[in-house]
Image 1 (spheres, rainbow, N blue to C red):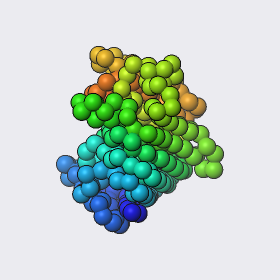
Image 2 (cartoon, rainbow, N blue to C red):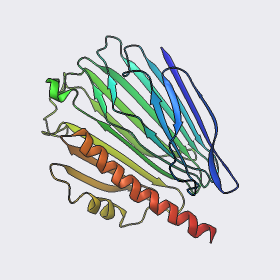
Image 3 (cartoon, helix red, strand yellow):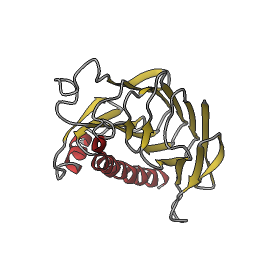
Length: 269
């Protein structure tokens, strides 16, 4: 089943707004902004489905117009059910000049025999900021389904103009390679990835240290943050709890979001 979602975030009179949205079942979009004085747009992607089913194809298209600021939120954990053929998801995100897009998604939970291939294509113009976070778990851990899915792959490609500046490929095949092996999960059960890109001022040299400092008080995780070029920083976290990793990414997200607000105000002044 092909499921479509389209969102366009516009900008007018100093405020971001939902210019247009289109969706088919099971998607819904809700405005979750809390403060009328906040000129940014806050949306939540909701779903009436319990998760992604065998044969599903999710097609998501998000456009952030010039000067618009959009923070997108997910509703809950995304379950990948038992499959024979597999499911797919493609997200296309377009950032026009001077726009900001921030999206940290709830963890993905692959059930036994789940097969999933995801692709995120993000295209950025000048003076844009992107924060994009994803988490994959071992499965239904408390039900004894630890790494019993068949195939999970999620590829994220970020382009600045026509140039590829970041590419992240998460590939987990527990039936072919033990997840505790070196270079895999190494004893942990959950993995989080956050990509931050700034095509305006670029990334400050001390940003990885700032982000690492935000996580210093967290126990039971191992984390790293590194610059992947003049415009981007990538954070990777391994842990044993989905909620903990989600809170870690949200903490980083809010730090970067507030910094983007300050930068926007300074531009206006």
